[in-house]
Length: 270
Image 1 (cartoon, rainbow, N blue to C red):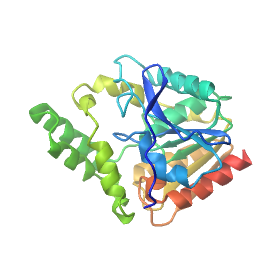
Image 2: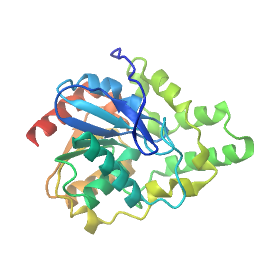
Image 3: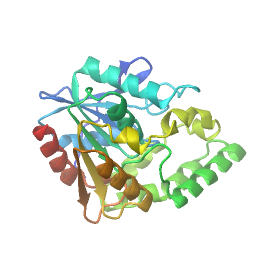
């Protein structure tokens, strides 16, 4: 794993924190996975030195404020676009959980970004992995019974979402450190997660996306995410799909060099 200097957390929007490489070049806005934060992308950024990278901590994650009940996915997409406008971001990259927000942005704000990259994409109201659903249920039960105890983090890191991270030296330990800072309060109050899960994103709406779209997927990805990727690729006229051999769910984190090459080509072509 390439050694990277951790970037300082800063406020980049109302109630929103993140990290900024402050490099020269066009600006790319990044959205992370569930229970992670913007620091999870720092190694991937080191392989994309031609660009400035701004990583946003999603609500309830990292340094950003808690998720507010009643806030919708559309509201969150608008906040992301506001940050992008202030920062001058021309490109959007999202991973896993963050792709639901990225997809909403691409659907509702057609001119906000020149290119969009969705890695391990999910769709609000779309297919879900049964094993992951069981993991969420077990975690919710444990949180209600015992609160936020270390076993909760261990249980989450044992779920299928994290398969493959052990193949990259130091990655599992680094991600476990980030997850260890997450509060998991959304497990007790599911309304706090509503902004990430609804309303459902329909194929008709997805088909209206006009941005140049790159889909990144590990060849060993969970079937539900492969189905989501296939749906997006089929619906979006300017979508291109790239599969990474031997890679699991968190493809940008497990294979940052390979993903960076594909992302760079996509950004430069945009």
